Length: 284
Image (cartoon, rainbow, N blue to C red; front, side, top):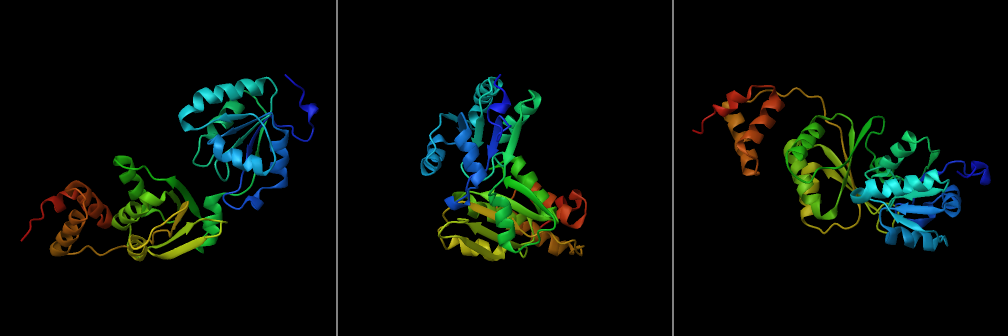
């Protein structure tokens, strides 16, 4: 293995390097130096990251490293690290390891006593949180929701009860569905901010209640990377409605596409009542 004293300014062999989330001026001097001193650069999308490296006038061998090949590519990178090669990992944008397989490389380095470091920089979730104006004292990062199935329902229910500010990522083509689902599981008056195109020309924050934003988004085409910031739930004890009120809420959820089981579970949790009581409700 090469001595680390060969390059005293870069003692780590593996470096997770934050890259701009939009504006290329956001990259740090240190990040540029580390990339310049790397023997190899691993990236989610080598073509996308290749454009950044071209802009920085950095030409290094690249390794495709993404979720679908993290095991095989990870072993190749580990072999290079054991040979004393310096490898930098970059994501498509922002800090590697957040909503990407970068954490897999960190564990490989830890398990094999490989020196590693993180070069801090832009992070879409934290930047959007500050941009949103929502409480920053306590927050939780949820990333991308599962696209469908029971895991999505479980996460939505957890978010409905979460009292801290919630940070979510979402793709433009799924934003309407996610807002609709959040409106069903959460209080529709709960405040939400959609931040898009951070640090770019069309940077924008769209804010309002879940109900308001759902109506707004249906009337416009949303493009660009999206970060959703959802206000924490309020700790409010709701008065249990009479049977007619419960029946009305049940019918509303069924109309919105929920199965009877899902609707019953949501209402039972909301008011702390037994599901069996709701199953026994009969339409007049």
